[in-house]
View 1 (tube, helix red, strand yellow):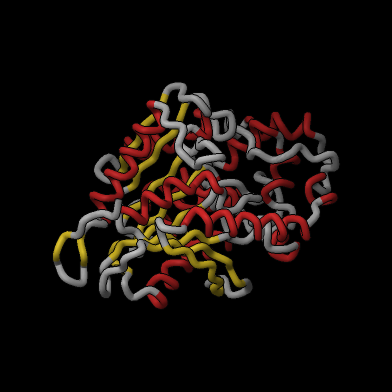
View 2 (tube, rainbow, N blue to C red):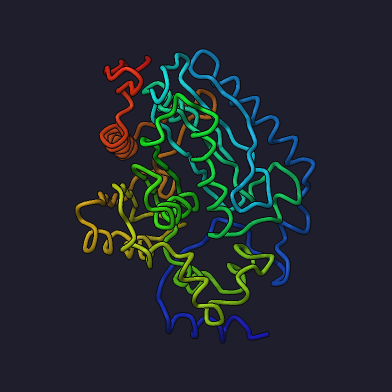
Length: 351
């Protein structure tokens, strides 16, 4: 095997810079430490506790369901949270958001509670897929990870679920929003499926896999994102696969309004990576893309999601407020949650 010392110069000759994925450093290049010692039964118990917290947080604010659906990839049932306003309108009365959690080994974290509450209070139906590779659903689901591949199909299939199971959702007003790795999935979803979404928001998104691997170490990062070797090799062996799963190379496919926020003090998706996307959008899609670069907000990578775990209230820094104000303005403008499509009459948000 070629050592890291030889691999790093080779990749840096292709690209420069790039950050970490927020995962533990493996102690064995063949198998991550997390995978060797992971207690999957405990993950399932922890997920049950998370579900109970979401149910408690939903009481009096919104209706919560936990559903499953078959991914369009055809090989896996995907768990998903569905949150709805307490008072539903008639057919096509509500827009919807597909909410894509961060982390390649994550799930729908409780820090999203105040923001999903806000979404439903504004009239949105929210579906949050626990795409393949997420924690809390057993070893087979965990091992099904397909970074930038079938996990995108898992998320996009949620559109079909909304159309078929929720008649009060207007299929012409469906948006998608995601953070970090979820931001990457958001971008790949709209670049590969150019007509099914009305608008998208990608926060601090992963954008360029060549750069990320060059910056943080090829072996470690390859093992983190592709432990089953579904890519079929390393970047110089499978240029096509890594390029197809790097959103920055698909900017020309953008056909819907897109909002992107990044920050210069991000120690996960570093600014050197995200500015490639921002600059490409500003140069080639200025009429569709809105971008904002924050200087040094408290929290860096998580600046917009920091909440008090006791009260689930946002931290409310200046940058956090500004970011969410822009997100809601963007989504409300493009998805019009105050319009009751069943009656043609504007509706008041729930407060």
